[in-house]
Length: 273
Image (tube, rainbow, N blue to C red):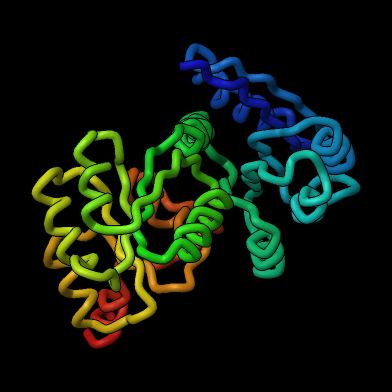
C-alpha cells in the first residue's frame, strides 16, 4: 500500500516548544515521509496554510500578531480546510475554547507536553486516514445516499458499500471484507436487531451501529443485548461518526470532539443513579 506524504505545520513563538513538537513528529519518519514547516508567528502560519494543503497543524494559542484561535478560524478559507488542528498552550480560557471548538479544532495539548504526546497525535492521524471498509444497510436508497454523504464528511476515511436488505448485507459480509456495519432498524422482513444477531454469529469483531428515528430504551437495550456496538439516532452528523470511530478503534477522545454515549440509555442511567 502506498501512503501519501504527511504535511505538518508547527507554529509557536517558543523555540523549545517547536523542538519538542518536531521530535514527536519525527518518531514516525520511518513509517511515512513527513514534511514539516516551522514558523514563529500566526501570520506566517496562515500564509503556509493558504499556500499548501497542511494535514496536521500544531498551533500555539498565544503568538505575536495573529493568535492561534484566529488562525484556526481563518483555516476554513485556505487550502487546509480539512487540516487536523491541534492547539498548544499552558492554559486556555473559555472564550478561546468555545471559538476553537466552533471552528473545528481537533485537540488541545497543554504545555509542558512530551514528545510522546505529539507522536500519539500523528499516530492517530495515520489511523484516521487508513481506509475502513464499511457497509450501509438500509432499504431506503435516499437514506443510504444521505448516510454515505455523512460518512464522506467524517474525519475518517471509509471504503463505502451499500446493501438494501438484511439478506444482501449477509451476502456482502460473508466475504470477510467489512469491519463496520451501519444498519437501519426498520427494514421489511428481517429488521436491524435480527441482522445484528446474524452478524454476531459471523464475527465478534465487526463494529455494528444501529440507525433509527426511534429512541426507545427498549429498542436500545435490545440492540445492546444482541451485541450491537452503538446506537445512532437519526438525524446524526459526521461528528457522531467521528465519536463512534474513536470508540471502535480505541483512540483517545480529542479535547474538541463530540461527547456521546454509545447508547443514550447509558446517559439516562447515569443521571438516575
